[in-house]
Amino acid sequence: MVIPGEDAGDGSSGGGSGGDRQIAAAVLVPLFLAPGDGEPHAVFTRRRADLRRHAGEISFPGGRSDPEDADLRETALREAEEEIGLPRDRVRLLGELPAVSTFVTGYTIHPYVGLIPAGLAWRISEREVDAVLELPLLALRESRTRTRMQRRGISFETDAYIVDEHLIWGATARILEHLLERVEELLVLHHPSNNND
Image 1 (cartoon, one colour):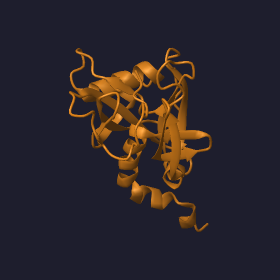
Image 2: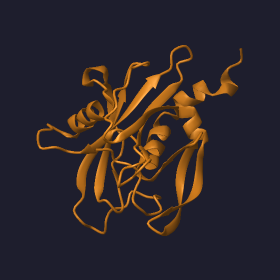
Image 3: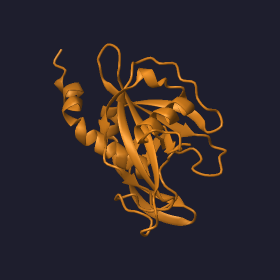
């Protein structure tokens, strides 16, 4: 199961679902350093366009906790393996980002950051995943914007990241914001203006 953006809402804060009991979920935020220049990239999934819910949305691999998961880290690793074929033993967990809540679906999402080797071959779960996206963190940081969206007849403005045709919004955008805050120093080192060749 992929935890995508949201069903509706402005996506501007962690929020909750009116005090209702939240469902625990976890996502893996896979990072790798590109061969050659070492530029950091994040790995996302894009949901299939023909799904009933969250069709075509971009997210990190993840989902709700299963009873057999020892903890939420295990949930994130299991879901990434199921959705994109990322072997658990190829992930070096670096830490956890702040939890993010969804407004309509009632999830509390716990993001775990993991370093993976570059150049892995993805094996996607064709039931739910349309594609795996490897996006440079620098391009993501520079693409932050506000955009107007419409979901279920409700029009709203939200923070988003747009790289090429890829729109990242909602809970995924909030997780990405937390990530970018923590890797700012690394991104400054890889900015083209710092390459005085």
